[in-house]
Image (cartoon, rainbow, N blue to C red):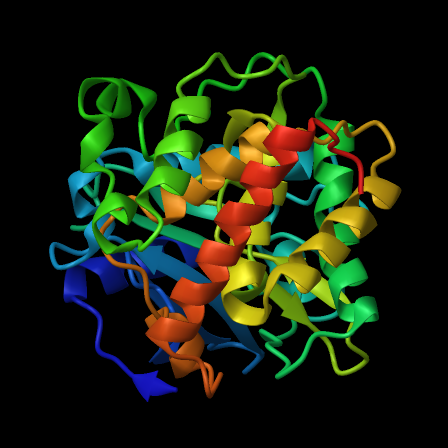
Length: 345
């Protein structure tokens, strides 16, 4: 990992959160972090020499999230809710030293928030300090059924434990907003690059209908393979990057992951994932509306292509053309589901 030098004001804020006996030994930039700056902090206690590690998300002027004030308050609130409800951890721990000692030994499945400065008033830039979740991203060349089942099973407890939650202030919003599509249905980028314009027009018209009823729950909102960490036994140890946490339909987490799996591996992998999720969460009722919704989100920002995060993690042999072909196949598959009105796998 690349060593980085933090701004003095940000360093000062971090050390204030850790306490006077801690010193900052080394800072390394973590892979990913396209919309914000993710760092691994190595610190030690002066009196004991004990070494600890933490993760920090900072939103710098050059980062994509800089134009979204208060975004770290949302992530902090999500992490605090996860801890309070013990959704991914055995217990909620709120003392700094206890957190630091437990973080490397436990199988915690979400980071724990230690401190945050949402406005950047004290740190100089918006920043959030959190525990380290053990594990690393796993992107196999070909996904096994066991890998897909683990991926599906990991997110199900979140949806089950928070079903009916109503007092979380952040709500799900579609990136490819229905309002924009209503006003300009001909402006969706897929209509420009696809050789099957009529297919996408039909999907857009379907999406503009009223969304199906759903029981709101806490959703990750960006659930996909590079936000999941694994151990050497190919078991999931953590789900990270909760900056988009909100109340919404479970189908959005499922659908968002499915689109990513289509791009990475193809339709069969996405369907295996869905079948595994439905087994892990028997109360879930599948509806293709959310898959179509997520497909529109993923294709709303221009021509689709290989995600830089995948190549940075060493995923090879994926091209823009392959992804485009897989997305076209997925769009046709979803349209066929609508025509048959038969949604079960």
